[in-house]
Length: 266
Image (cartoon, rainbow, N blue to C red; front, side):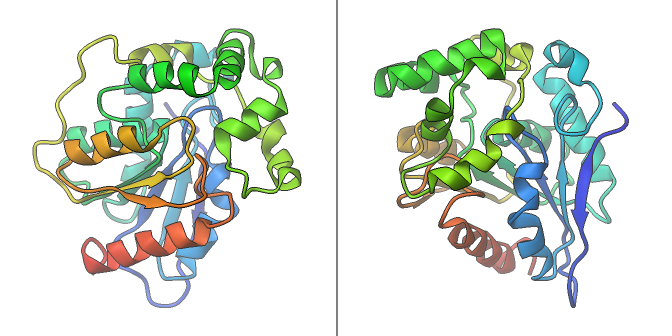
């Protein structure tokens, strides 16, 4: 698909050897990276880009978002990666982490990836059932949003799903109007009902990060993702699902930067 929104920040000072491509999760767009992560990494010498998957942000296809499957999103990420100056490190959040996992399997030239509060390789079934147990109210509200659109989900449920109590509510409210519909087809694709394709055979370096107070992908799901990629997860305390927006985000960014400098960006 053409006409994908790609937000870009040029590096300040000497450039790092690899660009970064950020991939958002469900119900949002590239904007989620633009406020903090893109300028932060650009200021440290990285060519930093964020793509809005088809039907999201200002990319085309919002009028038929429910037609798109996970393979379409992977195609978008590979297309955006091809626009970078060289194969980028992919950094995916939530559903975007699943897209990144599939992209790694599809393109052996991608050098590395970071998975932040990512959907695990085995899909959403365990997380969804767990959410119904951990917070029935949020589970019901998110189910209504999938069925009837974003207007069916109130702010309280959004806040509890996306943030921990360390996030000021007035700051969280700034993002409420930016939440959008997500493809029902994609949610079925990654639901865990059907077998998943194999993980990348070339075993690129993967950094797995989790948030200790993530309601959607709690530590057991993050540990499962790390296990699948032969690594260990790092967790950030007092942090909810949207790790790039709430207090503590700079600790997450710094951890990623230090990991990159030890390997992919060395």
